[in-house]
Length: 146
Image: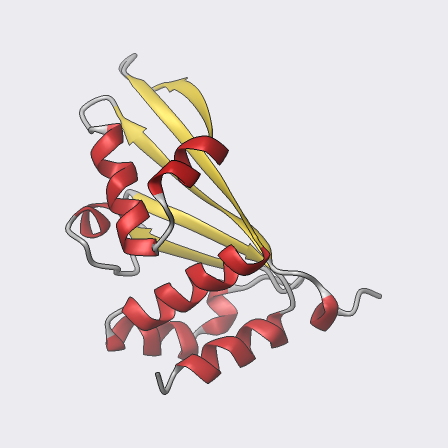
């Protein structure tokens, strides 16, 4: 059995960028709201072009998170979420994790473009963090009082 407490944190940010949206503006907003340098996002990201239902192009954008960068993103999310969203996340942690201790957070892409973080399932910025659930809970609980 895997010791979930010893797993290094790693993860991924993914989102869809529609044809009517400005990729530059969205990536700049993600960079600013999650405190990740824009040049790092542009250099390390992967993109896949998809086609929407009516034939419109959709860009599937992915950015990997590793070690310290992953921890910084978690810290930023916990510190910048409104108190109601942060409390909802903490009180419903089972709904945001799977059996392997992976954490799944969806943030509102439009709110991020306005410089704010908010939990949302609609047109989200998806963040997945692989790591020990206990480690994540300790990290989140430790930042709860920040």
